[in-house]
Length: 374
Image (tube, rainbow, N blue to C red; front, top):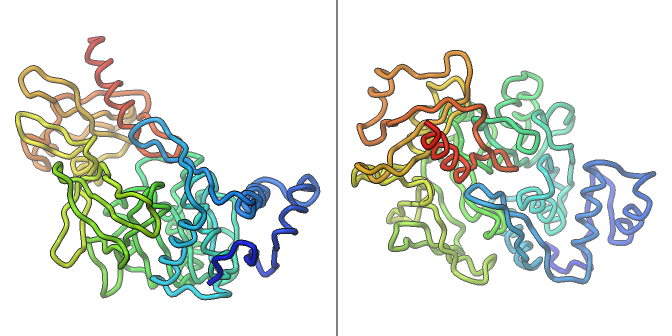
């Protein structure tokens, strides 16, 4: 692997790009590049600059997106961890099909630079395998989500719906899926694939993932396993604490409520911000959503509003649409009395972040506004 940026080059679909090539391509981009390819050139220009830092943007799933200044050296260490874990080698073809504004897309490129991988690029869309005509060693995509936006398409789900694209995916050796929870129905489909498929756990602050869990095959598990250099613990609020010295300068206290098991594996229950204390019992918005998801036909979200008797009341937001509401009898069958929504609000649209995740803060405000207006 190459950790000296002065010695790195990018193999782009069989052609070698040096630092000097990148400068030339950026300078004359109107003739030689456009769209997503030009974004790649601009990222490479920033990567090969003298600065040891890059600025990356967080997703903003729990608030306003923010910019983080990160060290390129740490990004290369993150790339090494992934390549070593997955056994990626020089010359392996890997697919870049995610936006370069965020850490996931950037790290695909960095892995290619560090390990000498052959980068195959496709403009981010809901059908990344539509015209990939060569077998891939590795691909990274986003999963099925309840929503569809231009920024975060339903890449894995859509690929499995088109036989030709599914066949191309099945010729891929390894697929990692990140950027959101994986729907139970999608996970069932994934279990039937011959590809090695992993779900990732990580965030912008950890420079992509620090743990993976296998979704199919004999090693399939519901638990994430961290990289060997990562040490995990729980805070007093049962949120995950990450000590990953290769990629983070300081110990990171997350907002993810977790359970850690004796063998070092862990599971994520949801975010602390999304814990609802109702009648003295804590319930997790994400867990309620996971239970309801197979039964809901339109986008929805679980949130809460202050309640004089309960402290907080569980609220179900549902986008307006035909057959949108789940029968009350079915909801009572699926949920405990503490998980059961005390209000069901029909709204025009579920608030989303730039990356297509539920905007939790906006959902709470929407529910509060609705209750105040009544």
